[in-house]
Length: 335
Ligand SMILES: [Fe+2]
Image (cartoon, rainbow, N blue to C red; front, side, top):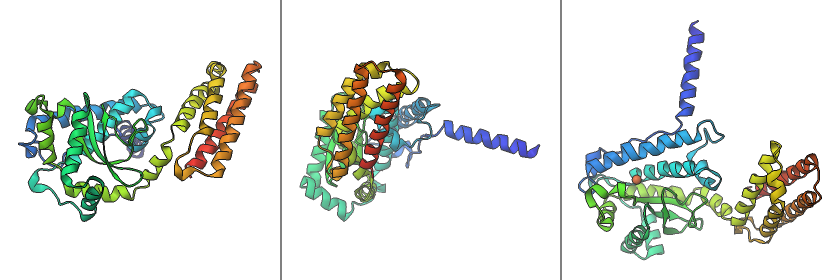
């Protein structure tokens, strides 16, 4: 009896932990410790209400789907294949977590490393120029969004900005890389104290940046294999083909051939564009080019079958071959 009860409790705990896979991180300091740069009420509402809402909405968005249990990084990296709810709330959770990590009251801040200092001088000329670049990106961001300092796939420092809750890890973002500074420029981050004076808020936020933490993030980012993954993933023609393949093949798995019959010509056109596109540098190999030619041939066969009004079973067999081949090619790209 005791064993059964123990198992039941354990199962309940496992279930609970799966359904609540993301949680609100604690702030490293008390809400009032960021004043006067950011007032206590803004910090409390921002953390307890806004960030908590992103966490709750993210858990709801993935619950009961194939995404449940996936890491935040995986959800964001392939966000172009996800719903808006996942895009907005995974971003909201990641971005705010980083914002809290890189901020500290001035007396508690660490020093910048020699490596990061040298990289800033190399890529921006001076710390002052970097500050101007981040402020300019934050001011130019129309509406809500974020300003970033990132490490690019070429291991250079770069300033960029994103709308809403997007971030540079996401595959919907033009300038991709690993963020080491995040500045929230949503009005909820500053409006109580600064109203419409975004520049005043930015100057204050700048003085809260903990360069000790940012230096650690820089050291970790330049050695992170994620940079290579981003470089390999920067292939719009591959994304475009993948999306059309997913939208035509997956319905066919459950017997719905209509999307494939309507879009086989588009699938072939995208296979041709993919073959003619330039793969990211690290992937430009003979093997991949051969794979892309084979993929185009296979899509041509699919399209011919559609034009001849082939039977469902024949068409399903052929699109499955094309889909399998696509994943082989995609696998080659990710080796
Ligand atoms: Fe925010």
